[in-house]
Length: 424
Figure 1 (cartoon, rainbow, N blue to C red):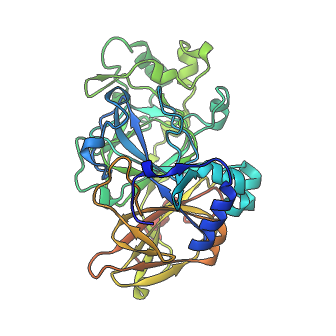
Figure 2 (cartoon, rainbow, N blue to C red; figure 1 turned 90 degrees about the horizontal axis):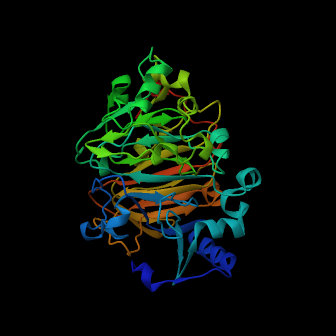
C-alpha cells in the first residue's frame, strides 16, 4: 500500500484478529504502524520530529504544540482535554486501521509472546521521540507502589539521542539529574515552600550534564531530572505519570497541579509526603553518572558483513531489566537477517530499503494525517525467525531503532560495559 492519508482509512473494531493474521502472514511477523503524535500544553516544540511546520499545532493552539511521537504504544497520553485515542499506535492493514492495543488484546501471545502476555496481559512498555526547544522542569516519575495509589503504573525510562534528529542542539542541550551529594530534605522542602515566590531554586541543588548525540541514560523512577533540548528516543514503561518539582522554566510558570497530579488528593499540600516521594539515596548518588550513563555497545563484530547492531539502552533498575533497545545500521547496498529473542517496535531514522520485503524509509517531512513507511511492530515469533533488512540506497546507511519488552535480552550489557567493548 502506498503512503496515503490516515483520513482515507476505515477504523475497525470487529474482526481485528483476522486482519492481524493476514498482515503477519504477508509480512513475516510485522505490523505496520501509523505515526502517533502527542502535544504538551506546557512545553515548546523543538521542531525536529519531521512533522510539517504547519501541523505543529494540529490539535489546536489551546492543546499546545506537538513535541512527541510515540512508538508501539498501547498507552494513552495523560493530557487534559485529549482526544480519546491520544498516544495510541494504530496498525495499518490495507484500507483498514485498528489500535495496536486492540490487536494485542485479541491476539495476545501471538504478538508479544507467551511470557509477557501471561505476566502483564498487555504490551507494558512504549517509546517516543521527545523534542523540545529548551529544557523542561526538574521532575520525577512515580514508582509502581506510589502510582498504584492513584490507579496508575510507575514509570522508569531511558534516553538515547539519535544523531539523525539532533542536527541542532536547540537552546539548552544539558540535563539536570538528581541532587548534589549532601543535599538535605529540608533544603528541598524549602523549594516547595517557595513555590509562589518566584524561582524556587531547585536547580541550585542539582547538577547538569552535557548531552551528547549517540549516547544515553537510564533513569529509575523517583529520580529527579530536567531533560535538556536534544531530541530524545525514550524507551520506557507504559505510563504517563509524573510530578514537576520546579516551578519556573525559562520564565514560564509551572502550576502546582503538575507537581501533584499523580499523588493522592489528600496529600496535595503535604510537603513532607511530596519530598518523600523521591528516592533520596538515588538522587544524591555521588557516582550518578557512573550508575546511569550509556554508550552504544556492539552486539557482535559484523562490520565485514555490511551491518552493525548496537545496544543503546541496557542495564537494570532494582535488579529488573524493564526494557532494552538496539540501533541497527545497514551499509549502502547491503542485506542482513537479524534474529532477536522477543517482540520489538522499530522506527527507521535514516535511509531507505526493505524490511521483510516491505517498504522501509525515513521520510523528510510528514503531514499530521499522513501515513509513513518508517514504523513497524515485530512479533516475538517473527523476531526469533529473523527479520531481513535491505538497504536499497547506493550512498546512505539504513538505520533503525528498536526497543524490547521486559526481561527479553538476558545477554544485554550492564551499566558501564561500554568501557570494555572490543570492536565497533
